[in-house]
Length: 213
Ligand SMILES: *[C@@H]1O[C@H](CO)[C@@H](O)[C@H](O)[C@H]1NC(C)=O
Ligand SMILES: *[C@@H]1O[C@H](CO)[C@@H](O)[C@H](O)[C@H]1NC(C)=O
Image (cartoon, rainbow, N blue to C red; front, top):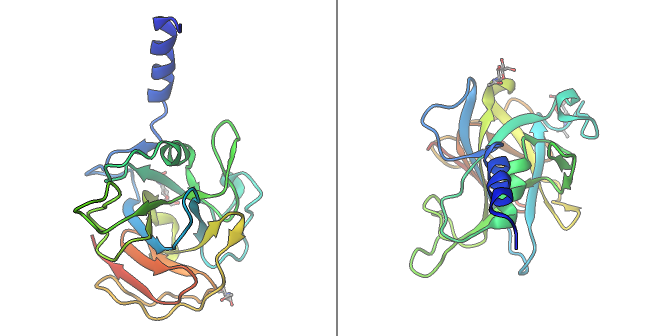
């Protein structure tokens, strides 16, 4: 039996590090709510991550601490609006403080494959994984965070999916659909997303949709 005092102490520790937050009306200076939906069919038990950062990956230092990597972008995950329990993803999200091109590390230096995404569905009627902003289909993995958009030139950042140690293939992104679409100021072999918007992509596919919240 675990003494009651220990349980209280442990739960206090857990509460003391709120790296994932409920959606806030006012974000820290420069931060904006941002969503990536990335469509990828997976097998049960697989977990999709994303890796990315400032610009198209040139001059990044993904093996350095994020504070020494000019491409690492500070993020705070927002609690997911789905009814399913996603304990492991939530723990990863709590510890994941930067979008980078390398592994993600928490403050205890344990390693994750990247920034964690969560499988969602658009089927409201029979699915715990229904997400109200998923109007696109099943198999849309979501990453929902506040990101410091002030760090970005013109508000764009790049990313790729990462699954079972494998990078998503290179693409040459098309002009995006959607009311938030804008032409990036640079070219890339990655998905180019817009900070402060809902960005919708498919794995290995150049098409994209960018909508305002
Ligand atoms: C966001 O980034 C800008 C530009 O680098 C910086 O001035 C600002 O302090 C950052 N915001 C926070 C809350 O750290
Ligand atoms: C990355 O962007 C730089 C300019 O910002 C450009 O010179 C370079 O060709 C781009 N790389 C790719 C792969 O598009």
